[in-house]
Image (cartoon, rainbow, N blue to C red):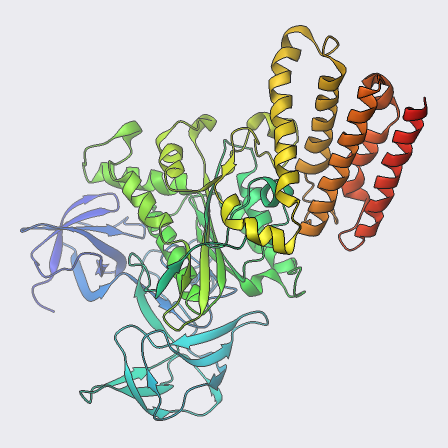
Length: 586
């Protein structure tokens, strides 16, 4: 090939190329003798700037840069679910067989298995008219997921040829479409999509259904809707990754896309090992049969870390277009923002606050806006929910990534180091966290959980807020001087904190709690509060009531009552009645 671009300047993973003026912005290129994968990120009249997604050791001035004419894109098709990819969708399990545990520069492989045969069910016929997004075939990708092959963008017309049901690989032409101009287009199992362009939808809908997680402090106090956005900020050791693991394991999303962006390799190893062993609570199948892992660990090139977020969200949108509800876990967006900062520094751009680029906010907005509950082009409904961890240095929630994230998310689960150090998990601080989805979900709660659910939730939040105010007094003068009704607030708040908010991820009953049990547990705690308040008004001192042991007993109910044995909670109501009658008579 003549007139190739050549490297004129190298700044780590950033290259400056001269001698070729026909690059497109975001075009994928191959660099040097090893054909390293890169992307054109800036174009000037006399040179272009390329970021490389692999180790650039060994590159030199004058090395050639080969254009591909294609935007940096993913190969979307069957074989994604259950796989683990790097930040630009290279299959790590397959690459390990070629290069061992450490990836070699320039190593390449097909993103998806080209030879595997898939049992294919054709659902269109010769003569049918199709348009972008229409479903042509269905493939059983895993026991949990039926993969739907859709007509890709730019193709519409009449089907003039279609194969019969059978076993085919992804290279097989399944159908041929002819448009009104007699142009013919082949439909295969795969399609390419640029990672930086959101996939097209028919309509964005309002959110109205919760993403059920089984975590009481989330489902009851600070819920997220399907198609919603949540952030989990917290310092080192506060449980961000563990929180995302719990959400990935137990949320009722159909598909999980877990992006390890700049995190430690052992964390991704733990995810892979856990999900390979754990079973989906709804179906009993292994979790990896509905999970995609994107691993871009801290020792991988920062350019690929920056791309990994877009790789994950593009895969999530692809399955959303089939009518699935997808939850994307981004762990963590702070490491992604740090990659932006490092690349911006190499480009010699003017830094903004704390060295982050001035476009940090717009990048975050563009990413989070790809979430949503939508009507797809084919008439199905699907959603992408984004849950992004934020890792502020020193746990400082006033730093730029956290503050800019708060501008775009509607659910904020602030992790507290004091709670974490006290072994209170999830370490979500109920005073600084918030959700804006309660009004959107109120009808769903009334129809599916109970009309008193939100009233009870608000009452418990009120008690916790009152406890926080009273603790300021207690720190100064102690609790003994408080009136009995305020002592009761402190005791009931303790029951709420330890018996409801705190949850044990390693306990068979407590790791996942369905909505019905959460509702019943709230009713028991608030019933105890009402009866205790009546006794206090009769003049019974709190010291005597505490000695009865009823409060400790209610705290322990989360471990004593199984998720399928909620009738046992009636025994606790009976115990509260006995407690009330005993002290009322006294």
